[in-house]
Image (cartoon, rainbow, N blue to C red; front, top):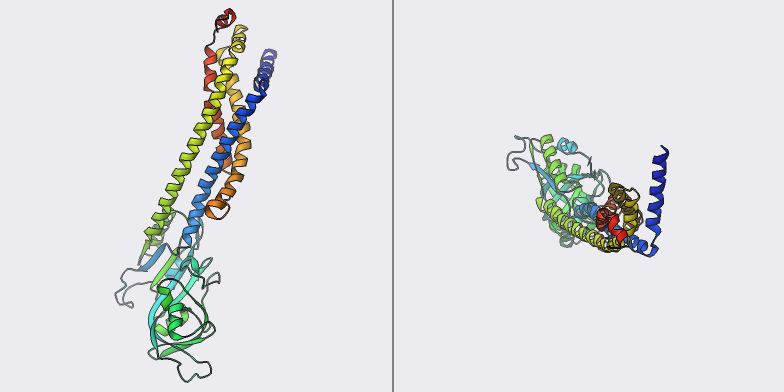
Length: 399
């Protein structure tokens, strides 16, 4: 036991002398390892955060899953279709976050502007307009229909005489927010106040949005829906898995993802991930070469020391363990400092690239430190040649 304790004490003493014998070279090695760890940690953190960032950016393009009746042209009273029960079966969240969903009912009705002071007459001739009854659940209806019109959150059913009008319809009717319009189909009609006029940049500009209960009354289609739109958070695999599960829940409907969104999201992330992975690998390789160059000089300086250690009974294994321990300590010190700086750096880089600061990912820190330790061990490869030093050669002065 005393001999083992003495060996450990000697091991620590020699290791301390090796580390601090040349402080300038020690600083250079730590600087190289810290710089490599900082850049690699920054790139890895951006890579992990990019997946979430891209997913959130693609949410602004609207719904990525559509649910429609299997036989839209059939008699709606004779075949199963979409109902309020179908809408309620759609989950409100998955492992990636909150799911936005909405139900829509479409129909063509006659619309006129309506003078509040002259309720017995229309201001202009009726024009045919697509009326859209809707209900939604989620953070914002703009998750499904990108626009600034709808600002309320949660499940919303307008139970009052209010409506939202696209810009094209408002221009044709000559109405603005605060005005009033009348919607009529056959002998059914109601008037509503225009809460807001906005430009969607799509077919929605020629539509009028009302609460679904009013659309059901106007179109005489109680508990019958035309389409359900869903915005599922996550990557293409998450959307595909959600689609398959939802199809089992709604066997009488057709559930299909909008593949142009999910596939584009997967391709963009794959390219960004590949680029950042290649850059990280290159940085770590350059760091290993820098450490290896410094270790080559150290190996030349330590030949006499190694010869002396082997002459007094030190085994090749102990000598190798000594150098490996030195490399691990240097890698650990450089990794701990560099990885912390790199994660902080990624926050600024994320703001420059995505316009929003990247969120620090704790999983990146231990990964970056581990990679730096591996780089330090690989960079210490030149010291392995010292194991083959022969004491007799050193003492004869042939080295």
